[in-house]
Image (cartoon, rainbow, N blue to C red):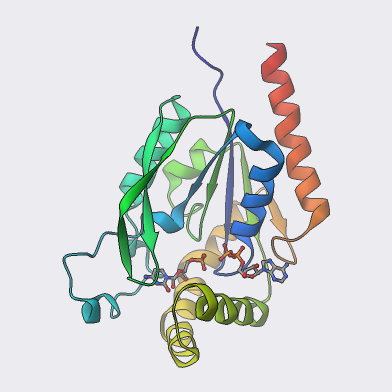
Amino acid sequence: MSAAKPFVIGIAGGSASGKTTLARSLAQALGQRVALLPMDHYYKDLSHLPFSRRLEVNYDHPEALDLSLYLAHAEALLSGNPVEMPLYDFKAYTRSPRTERVGPAPVLVLEGLLVLYPEALRRMMDLKVFVDADADERFIRRLLRDVKERGRTLEGVVAQYLQRVKPMHQAFVEPTKRYADVILPGGGQNPVALEMLLAKALARLGEVGAA
Ligand SMILES: Nc1ncnc2c1ncn2[C@@H]1O[C@H](COP(=O)(O)OP(=O)(O)O)[C@@H](O)[C@H]1O
Ligand SMILES: Nc1ccn([C@@H]2O[C@H](COP(=O)(O)O)[C@@H](O)[C@H]2O)c(=O)n1
């Protein structure tokens, strides 16, 4: 007997809106019942390019991501098969040589800047969430995070934000908000929103168990 189709939650939103925070809170609450596929790990492998050339890439354009591989991995998990998820190294601006095995689970969370961008991904989702936060708050969070965790400088974060992050957000990320079933204001630390998403996922798990 084949397993029931997973309940698929898509979590999109601008950079540093709180997508990862929300997805991790869901994963923590659901434990083994969740498979988490962060799109951040699916930036194209640029290990063939010298470091200086990697710095010139526009990482906020959909072309920077290996969306075909992301879609293939999401489809595999939806069909009950495990995947070897690439791991991305933000300090090296390329893929790490290591991968991480992600197994199928009753709840599949697809999280990332552009998860609502490809129609094929949207069609897979049972619940589409857009995490919203004011641009100034996102910028401040990103600045703190990128300097602390992603090996960036203050000047570098500011230049990248003005030249690429902001215009690409307006061109590719913000327009996907219209596809969302739920828009969560205030970022990824919204306990009421978390409770609501959990209730929806648990209700679906209950239905699956009863079938
Ligand atoms: N509601 C919030 N208030 C303040 N800081 C937050 C909030 N949500 C997330 N953060 C912090 O902002 C940074 C970016 O959050 P993250 O979840 O990584 O965003 P995203 O995945 O959307 O880029 C992290 O350092 C995180 O701890
Ligand atoms: N080498 C890279 C690859 C991506 N980025 C930035 O990551 C942002 C998306 O991740 P979030 O967790 O912030 O959603 C995106 O805005 C890219 O600019 C990077 O800086 N370097």
